[in-house]
Image (cartoon, rainbow, N blue to C red; front, side, top):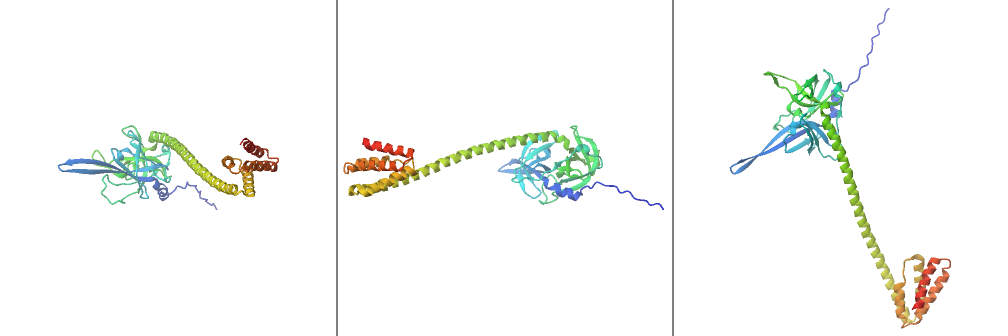
Length: 367
């Protein structure tokens, strides 16, 4: 008896179209170029708004977008709409008229989803492909959400097509509409291998269906190089701005520190002046009343606290006032000298404080 064992071939598991679309669609955007023109008639001005609708895709989380230039050529305003419905004004960074590609930039607070760039040299005829875009007519006269982010699937019809400018094109066997221009051409792995840019409607009077074209992403090397240079400059500019901001912040902090220090110094000086006036008032009372014991107690406390706790405290103003009082009470200077001598004796071993005390003793003798 002969048994036949079937061979089991291992097949590469590819993501489904639904998986690819779910992953990459947030990076596909709708682009609207608005051209404003005015015509003058007797007594009034007529303003006309012309719109062009197309697609694009995000190549960097910072908001850099690739699209076809013919969508936004001569546009006064460019609007980019994300899949979430958020709308942003875009500015043109770079235009390559030969390849009909433009690099746009929008400002967004959070990082945006971006596409992955594939290898167009590995594309073969018959490979499955996906396009996501906005197949709307050029004039916007349809409901706001009509046909946005439509998905179309097909295969590569040919890899050997060449444009009039000698650019490498992929022929697409799937429906391409006006609003698909500028949108990404995905391979079966969800990688961008081209940019949808045109379709053929007729040939020698014969109508055609499902014949579209996409520029190979390899032809966008020039734009990608410009994008790299621009992003590097943007980082340098951002770092320079941050450095300038740091300098401004340091200057501001220095000014605040000076102000706070001045306020603190003023408050300390004010408190010392109040304390000085209070002590002087008590001393004057002792002098005029002839209270020798009260005078000695105050002087001793002043000298002891000032020299031990605060070396920068000066007795100069107080001593000058006391010297002025000696015309009424001659014993003041003698008593002050005795208090200084007593304090110097008690501070044995504290040479720095003893020197300060001796300085005041000399002034007493001079006086």
